[in-house]
Length: 458
Length: 161
Figure 1 (cartoon, rainbow over the protein chains, first blue to last red):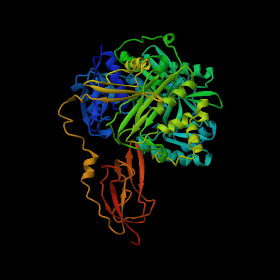
Figure 2 (tube, rainbow over the protein chains, first blue to last red):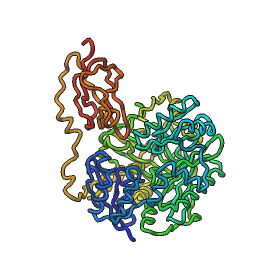
Figure 3 (cartoon, rainbow over the protein chains, first blue to last red):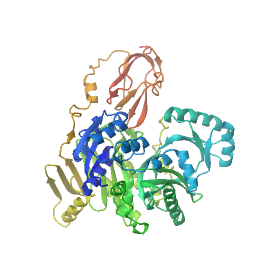
Figure 4 (spheres, chains in turn red, brown):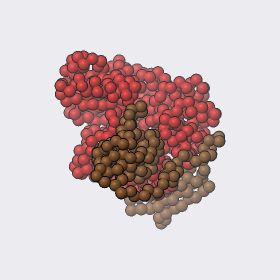
């Protein structure tokens, strides 16, 4: 079928990004807006805007019924869920099918296969992927036996967790039983799922992920990305390709990602995440994200593809129009996430009104944003203001280009983390490339602004 | 914003080979201002097209936080009483999770570091401390209500005051 009108069940920069892709394809757009976003840039850019509920996400962007109802009412053919919110929600996919709408995303079977971390681990084993030693635990005795096989320290992870939530480090055997019990109780309260599993703790790991795309039969990869610069599991800087990676590891991860996608008969765009152990020079499957990701522009920058357009083509039922040998990687790309937060005050979020928004422009610089002077940054959603993406033939030149691009950024009215990015780009360890996920805290400590204890409930 | 990023790149390539340092393009739907700066070209965009709303919803403005703030009475400083204000806007929660007992009730004794509530801002939970030693005499904001930065959450009578 041909998709003529897409309903966008998201907000912010990704809503703008999807509108742009649709416009270049000649597809009409209807954007869902909460009461807090009725006057936002996506609402102004879309062909039509419909209010789906009050500002809070649970009343609007997370409300499956309201979204599907609005999509039917506005005679859309398909729903694009963006990232976050309902993007990997199998209930939305099912509701779309029930109402004759195309869900622009993976199949319901794909979503179920990777939505549960233990099930995803089982599929990874079946597909022959390496996993960090570990497994599910029910009883304390069983946990101790498993822990002795894994070795210390290790992680207790909630099956329903993710993004750093529901994760506990255990350094010594005497603390295992109580940590498992606490983790189960907290996971039950937070995720309505008290299942936990143990996993080896990698002392110096990098977050490397592989972008794949499939049509339900054929699956290819679109290269790797490194997202190791993170604060409390929130990515800050991403790059493609992953720098300073042995070729054996790079091709190993790419092949593993494709094998996983083929095993799942994967449909659409997805990302297979790996933990790369810098000391052992080995990689382990972590999880799969069954959606478009925030950092997709760095892949687009080095492949020349429009990943949202590819999503829509596959959702229309087309077979893959690209073969693996059609994918060429040129140069290096870096993305910095400009967030509304005060990095000098423990990264306190700073909602408010944008007074000025000047961004860099020109060839090899891309800015994905939904803010301009007069935009409101509501307190209900995440703090992402803009993504600055640059490309160059060499990584060092890309770093320099990013410095210029960020220097040209002038966002007023809210605090931003621009200067944090500039300091990071000047840091010798980042400049050398291939930092691990513990790097960002080291960077902060070197600057004398050591992070305070985590305040997140889990 | 109706222009694509490639369009803007093309315009900048033309400008690069010219003497011009700035360019403004204004139509009914957008206003794009390009300027040469020491760090390279910059862009400022204003989307001028209004939202094309479907349906009756949205005619009324969002129940803004500003309205809640406007309704707040002017705070008269009372001797010995501290108004606990939120440093940031967001949703105010009186309990650690739905259904749990509130952190504090009127009449409770609190210390400087006693948590009196949580403000959820941009997906982050921030605990709010009393900041003074004393007794809670008034809870100004109900559970789950949206608050703006510097809004008064509670009032506490300081000990010995």
